[in-house]
Image 1 (cartoon, rainbow, N blue to C red):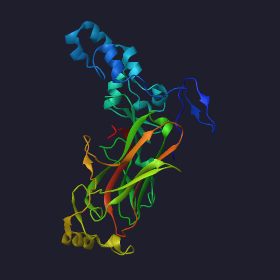
Image 2: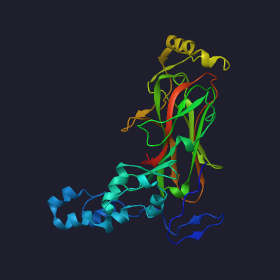
Image 3: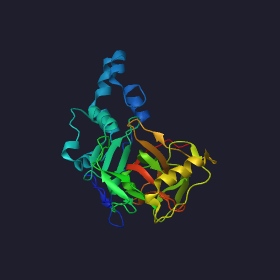
Image 4: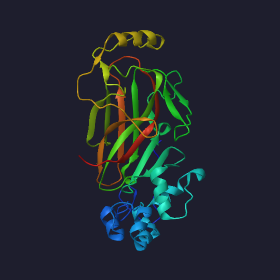
Length: 316
């Protein structure tokens, strides 16, 4: 399910264990300071603004040499794994940079999307729901696979009804930028019948398999009005008593205690909740992210899972 990433096309040496390893970081080493030296401005240049200042600065801002240094070094191998219709058709490196920062491309058979962070050029990925491990995900009475026009992937997972809610995803650290702090986010939406997540927080985690794991509790319900008491309906009959579950919830609605995180609305209309942070020291290890609610014993339904996104985040 978690395919090994394609190695870059440049010179490699083989690290013990059989994984290809570049001699240097696979991400662009030029960042704000080097762009300032090249163009007199920090960050990716805005050519329209620079043209007012100087023709020379405008030329530097549009130069392929400048923008190529801002792009990830293994970008060509990443684009090579993209579907034909997803490959960006551009005329310059600047156009490629801006395109990838605004429009993710689908890679690895449509099971991941790739983009770059506009202000830094660092890599961002989203793992599609189909590439995640979803407990009972292939059982139609619990989960259903549907297509939505607002999703970047061909399929999303709709939660029909489960007691045991468990989602896991993995990505190899060699796909991420070295010496970069990343955060992972569950990207999802609610249906009009969402229920069961307002009663109890879910446990989310991130960490290297076999190493240190960071765990915290968050709510998947967007509202900060939660329940002190949540209904525990028989697992055998819970799917047929949604009305009872909702009624019990309405009778016990009070503000929740605790300093929990809640989902935030994204620009693309989806919701996201942070699963935790990870600083990439390098190497070829499996980073795992998880979302669990297996303790409360009540039925949950009405979520639509698009995937798990991994993107750079400034350290606090």
